[in-house]
Image (tube, rainbow, N blue to C red; front, side, top):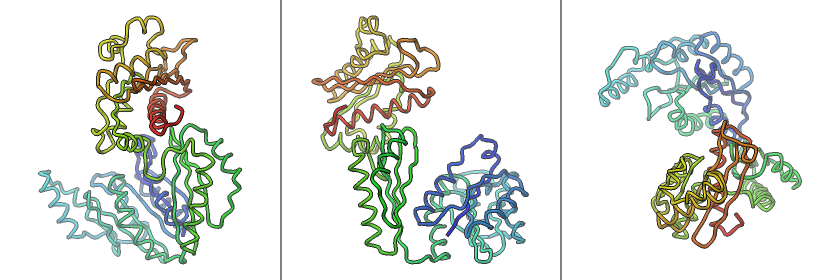
Amino acid sequence: MKVGILTIGNELTSGMTQDTNSSYIANEIKTEGWEIAAMMSVGDDESSIASGLDYMLKISEAVIVTGGLGPTADDITTASIAKACGLNLYTDRVILERIKERFEKRNLKWTENNAKQALFPEGAEIIDNPTGSACGFSLERGEKIVAVLPGVPGEMKWMITEGLIPVLRWKFKESEKTTIRTTIKLFGLPESTIDEAIGQLDIDLPGVIIGFYPRFPEIHVVITSVNTDRYAVSENLEIVKMRITERLKKNIFACDYETMEGVVAKYLKSKSMTLAVAESCTGGLIADRLTNVPGSSDFFERGVVAYSNPSKIALLNVPQSTIDQNGAVSEETAVAMSEGIRKTSGTDIGLSTTGIAGPAGGTLQKPVGTVYIALTDGKRKACRKFLFRWNRKRIKEISAQWALEMLRRYLIGRDI
């Protein structure tokens, strides 16, 4: 089955908002073994919506539409699609009462324009929205189907997996093919190097597709296996996964829904080790990622953002002479920061970052993108120097990633 994705909203076509819905929907659709015919964004304009829908129906068996289901004047998706399909709108009284109850429970003032979210094209099957007021709907257009969902990502995601995909499975009963997928997450290698390494494996198994997806600062390798034989579909995927892992294992840090910070947390907990972090150029990004992990209080003692030189001296006991002689961005200062936070917090490990994120502040000796990351444990002092060629935001992000990667390597006994 081929699926078209149509996202609606002036905020998308103006560039004010990034369209993350399409990539999420495409991923879920591909997981089912279906194909993406096309993805398109149009503004809140009746003729644009009609033209986009018409095009998608010509090249797809199913069209998934998101956005424009709110109560405001520019939310015209429902009315535009009904008109394009030659259907009248009706008010669903059950949905209307539910919306009103939602407003009452939240002590929100009711205005009549909110009743707009209870309007649906005649013949539509309603797709429930348990977390918001805008329900979706699906329409059958001959042998094809049009599904319309709200554009709020948190609401749309639940409705896709729990509400829409079961409908599509029933509507488009495929052959007895089974599709499974796994994601291998890598860091520290460019996409071209990964592609070359996998290409040399000469993998040729029926129904196996390998895709490369940059997710800065990571690279995700997605293996999809499709087969009518349930045993073969799993066996083929595991063969490919094993061969890729053998070739690239040094740079593989996680699979599927695992994250770098989650993997680091798992190792720290299993070893009953504690950590404190001193950050300068990363501005708290490392601490933020680590504390996103549930139960991080088991291993994470504190994080200090020591941005200025006086703060490095006062909070981390970095000697004034170390900064005077070597500069704030140096191996000596990074190591002193790491040891300082480790000693003051009483943790097993100290981790630190210091660098020049730019766009100004660089010199010939230390250009923008120069970053030092240090890790100490009371016995060992390790520090790496990096020179990143990115903008300020990306330099901070990749520095935080490398700090976590160095910590991961330390915890599994690898060279940092």
